[in-house]
Amino acid sequence: MKSYYANKGTGLASLTMKEHDIPVPGPHEVLVRVRAASLNYRDLAILWGTYPLPIKPDGIPLADGAGEVMVTGPGITRARTGGRVAATPLPLWIDGPFGGWDYAAQIGGSLDGLLTEYAVLHEEWIVHIPDHLSFEEAAALPTAGIAAWNALTGGSRPLQAGETVLTLGSGGVSLFAFQFAKLFGAHIIVTTSSEDKAQRLKALGADEVVNYRTTPNWHEAVRELTAGRGVDHVVESIDGLCAGFCSHWHIFRGDGGGFRRALQALALIMAQSRESLMRTPKVTTLSDGRQKRAMVCPSAHLCAQQSLV
Image (cartoon, rainbow, N blue to C red; front, side, top):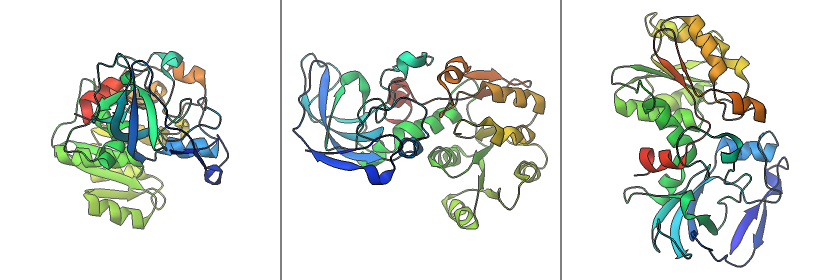
């Protein structure tokens, strides 16, 4: 079998293909033939050297992938030979609140990933994928897709038809979020950095697009597009620097000061330090009763219930 290997901070050119024997699954493990894998921003950040979490030296990249169970080890109860499965990015986080560094092991990071022909995974690290999804579609969902879905539907105030959603940028989470929101019947505003991207976003169904390079005070433009009311939901994925979107509070309805304070409660996907991730609350209630929620990455339970069934 063939696998690709890389090291943190060594760039795309450092990817090295190696051939080795197909591994044998142990107790409660499965051997998966990887049919598709997808690239996320965090995978690039590892190669760039900016990803803050521990990375396995000479490890196999990519957190997201899907494939077919070829062999099951002793004691398996959650999988069968021939089953179609996807991996969960944070495999030790099964359900409930994020439990800190005991849950921080990551496929394609501190654990070997899915840029490989075969992978051995614990049965608790996989979820089953439905027949209507191709392997390619299922491989694209776990990190960005489910984070976007949960941002719109989780918590005490899920998205409703007719509401306005603002997605910031055109990264994976934002693209998933605006397409999901469109299916809900929401009005979609997207920010982006170029006219070319703006045209592509409109072709995908965005109702309004604001170029934040030509419109530095983009929050004011969003206010104008909503007749001064502001938006109901903002979906943003960030790299650990809050300063870049302290202007967001201007675009929400209600008390801007409440939203400014809510920024301090973000659970950052790319936290700058272990301490900042550990102490970050997951939910903050705004002054008008709405909630600002954030996710680090989806748990196995979310993968199983919110997108892959």
